[in-house]
Image (cartoon, rainbow, N blue to C red):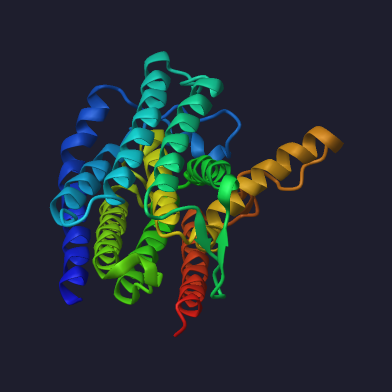
Length: 346
């Protein structure tokens, strides 16, 4: 119904407002605490002037997302609470990482194995929860009416998806407004998809009417969550678009990764994630190919990985790369929406 749509819009507006209001409070505070970004020596030269820009700005939109979701998604919480907790849990891992980087004044932060263990545990908890929830272990195959029953493979696949997504979003966060812009497009699309799925709700017959209405309510709450994430990204772009006054840090990028993975898993449309998140996938795959190629044949495929730096090295302005990534994401999201519509037989 229309009030669900209204709640999603309210959530987006509130989240954006909280983010925009907390920015001017938090940014000077981060400056004072000297939470500046240490730029990697390996990055493009143009990025060295970014050193000293405060990081951990992701705290602003995490506040926005939590506030808006808690206020507008109260009717059903079986999916939205785990989604929110997963977002905050990943934010905490990122926060530890950022905090250590800042304290030690290096670009190391948490050790790789500590990060992986933390990410693995969060992903495992969510995967087990999803498997035991009414979602079960089947996922939608987009562009078809078939459901894929994954059985025993469900948990390992979902864990892989979550860890992969979180790290892909983290890798994409390398230009002013890039991760926030692409995440904005993704979350807006997921808001529409959740609202649409809730309105159709072609539940299996054996679910019964009450269960079906409950599931529709859960999906509407997820729409509110997705809208809150979109609002947070929107508000954050106010400070993070070129030239950025603040970076989201791992605090922000891991949180966004968690939120994006949660939307994919709880919509049961996990397979839409590589389509809608094509830019995230491209960032991650470019790094894997680059490292693999260099180790195997001592040759680089890209001028620099992740992919966005390659385009920078080709002479694109930072703003152009961001605009192209965001518009490509939008096209893929519209395509994915077609996949959802085919699934539900429109």
